[in-house]
Image: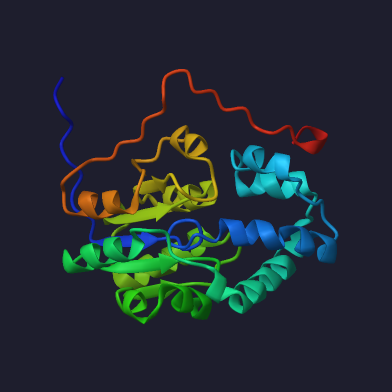
Length: 239
């Protein structure tokens, strides 16, 4: 079988932060039910977590019974907690080496995140933070496409030459809305099977694969194991 031609080298790598660079999911789970009590939405039991990881953000919001008007309030509170606890959140193993390799290859790096820029920089540390050319932080929960459009305009990179990388379905949706190729990571908030089923251009199993792709050494096309079945968690009111 003829191998398809390799994709052109990206002119910009746009990285999500939480769940892509930062291993913040354990911290997120540790504070979630306290936030639920404060803002009066449904608590999450331990046995529900893996089922929720198969869902996108909109489905999770519906399952938790959060009205849309509360989302900005909840997000701001979560960001304050993340700033308070930034010292408890570490980067995934291999992330610093990946950032260094991509920067050394001469491909600019950007971060697109709902988190606050000061928190992102603290978790990255000064050396890693200095490798990021552009920070597009503070996006609303469902506002990443808008922030990505502004980021591309600022950098002057065409959408099809910007590789977006993230761990959530909303990251993929933002990239698709702008026409950017998307690479899903298998170590973040959303189960990699749910991401792979949506057909991202790439699926990474470790950070080093991102650097190898940028260097043109591998394709990292998404693959699902034969017989894999996705079973989404039932949502209230048939949502």
